[in-house]
Image (cartoon, rainbow, N blue to C red; front, side, top):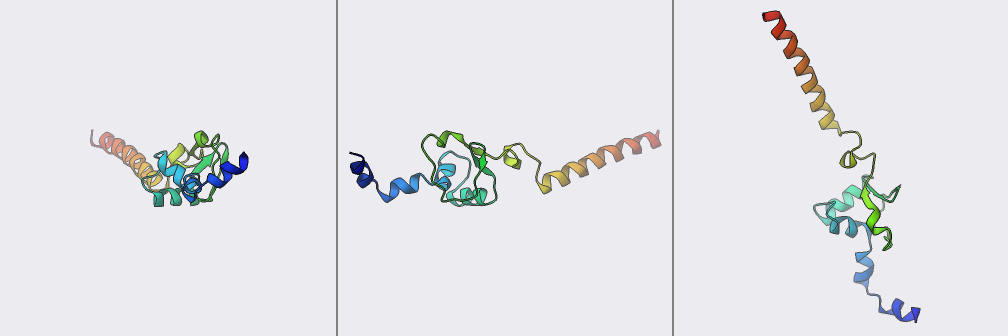
Length: 105
């Protein structure tokens, strides 16, 4: 009975279970290529485990646990380099703008 299930599997069935495909189908990535990049850069986790292998075969019960990593900027972790730089510049501008107004008065 189980042998019939195994023999009925097609290549497409295996390709649909890859983490790269699942990330794209869940809408976490804009394309299949973007999904691969996100996985390799350690932005994706399955459950509590960060996975960086795009060919990782996802079990059916694990599929609902695919999400962004907690340490990833996409998942609410530390902001990226550009966002940190912009925030620092805005903070300096706010501090500098307040001092300039006080001196003019």
